[in-house]
Image 1 (spheres, rainbow, N blue to C red):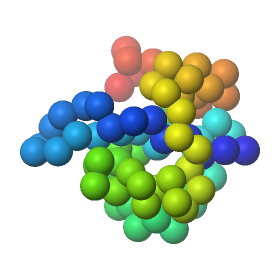
Image 2 (tube, rainbow, N blue to C red):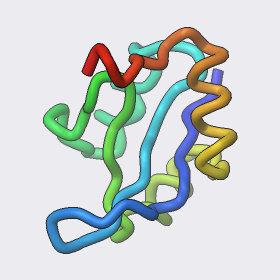
Image 3 (cartoon, rainbow, N blue to C red):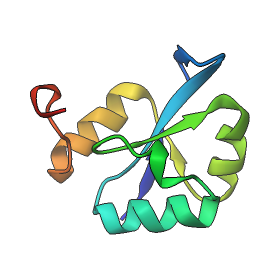
Image 4 (spheres, helix red, strand yellow):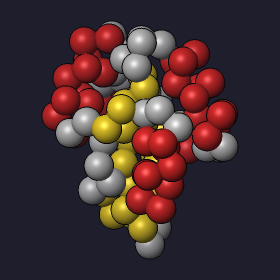
Length: 87
């Protein structure tokens, strides 16, 4: 079980955002986010949005940094990916 974070590449709201996911369960993801102080409102169907300002801290807390393609591949393989049509 691993919590993954991709590089912050997506601009919005005056900063740049990455994504935090679990390759095992939403419970694992929500528990990690709670430990990191990420508010539940940052959860978007299958991931948490993480601002660039918090990225190093999230990695220091144990999230595994991966590229965006790897993050999506592992999220799909876990069965936790929510298709765009269902968002």
